[in-house]
Amino acid sequence: MRLADYLLRLNVDRYDSIAWIDRNHDGSIARAWTWIEVQRLIAAAGTFCLEHSVGKGDRVVNFGRNSLAWAILDLACSAINAVHVPIDGRFSTAQQKHCLDLVKPKLVFADGPIASGPIASGWSRLGQLTSLLPTDQTLQQIALPFSPDDLANILFTSGTTGVQKGVMLSHKNLHSNALAKLDAMPQNHHDRRLNFLPFSHAYARTCELTTWLISSSCMEVASSMENVFSSAAFSAPTLLNGVPVFFETLEKKFMQMQGTQACVRELLGGQVRRLASGGATLPNSVRARFAAIGLPIYQGYGLTESSPVICSNRSGQSDMGEKECDVNLVEVGPPVKGMKVRIDESGRLWVAGDGVMLGYWQDTEGTKAKIVNGWLETGDLAEYVENTNCVEPSAIKILGRADDTLVLSSGYKVQPLPIEQMVLAESWVSRCILVGTMLPFPILIVRALEADYPPMLPNEMLARIEKILHEFPRYAIPCKVIIAEEEWTKGNGLLNFKGGLVRKKIESRYQAQISETIH
Image (cartoon, rainbow, N blue to C red):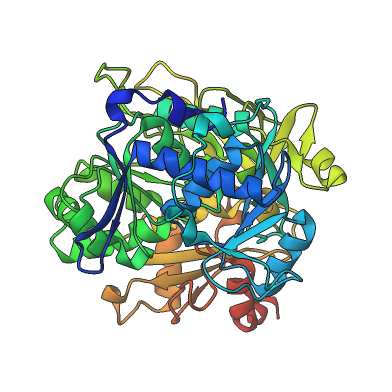
């Protein structure tokens, strides 16, 4: 099924329920749209695209920020079998131009003038799609024949490991993966969600936007991650998806408020029933902190190329309130429905199933290298972890990127993530990163919590870390600790927008101190 068809199949009783809310700066409601109004807007937007000669398979580029208009455009493209290509506005001008040149769009939407590409002056304002006059055409009349395997979206990877690639996702990819996520974490039309993650990336595209549509819940958008807390005071969400950097911020706030479940709920509007994290590895210490107060964070794992969800922690309660199993919060959980995994002899994780992409746009060789005999190579190292509290497949533990493996001068190989997670479990550590390719032993760069200043001396810290890591092989235990005085943030480029470490930049920042060890 394509996503626009859900609006044709929504129960009539829900047509008058609220689908989307926009608020003024003071928190009052600026506009609320019902599902039937959303359906009419999609028909008008689809008609607008058809009148601008957009046909089956034509690309429609969208530079806009998250909004109802964004969702309207996506569903209108789905209805007329066009291909929606959202591009993150945070990409550099050169990256934006690369994406435009690659997809050669028929139509471009944005919130304002576009600085990149030959079509800089040829764009339409995205916001107009929520103010189009009603059309005589209905959504049912503009919906064109399609195949589930037809291309629906091209989502660009963030480019952290090279040039951005256009990931081709079909209607079947998007639909099946959202249903799989809802199976793992049931949601319904009574839910209210507060979004701040970009729809132009697969995590929010599936776990926010598509699940919103299928569950016919109510959506609001916070203007930024920093504004989530002020927005939550008015929207009182029941569901909140975040990335690690958000939950680390939330942890700091509730610790300042004495750290109780009531404090967390108050910070998030008082009604939140489920927190979920994705996009990067959530530190075990953060998960443990929230689980201890009875508000666990459910974690998922995936990639853009898998639509994105491969594995997910599962809720202990079905949508109908029936008990399925005990809450499963082991690592990133088992594979979701419709997805199969295998771990090869080198420890690399592969996935096959309904969510695996059609391929990379105009990159046949890249597609062949990534998908072998129907199996997608994730680029991650993983291992199985048996579940003891639930009759389910084994959970998956992600050990880190295969490309992050440290090859020591002794020939030994070390995976940084397990060591970093052990250290991060200590209350005095804010962040850390293990480096040391072609060194005799690895080096640990540590950012200590400010509350522990004046900090320990490096040798004192190293002694503590050696005790923490006593079960690891001797060659994997750091020979030196570098204490980072500078905070690691998105602003200074040492964290990406998901809150993940930008390893190469951090290592480069401390290269002089690392080199002292070599000599």
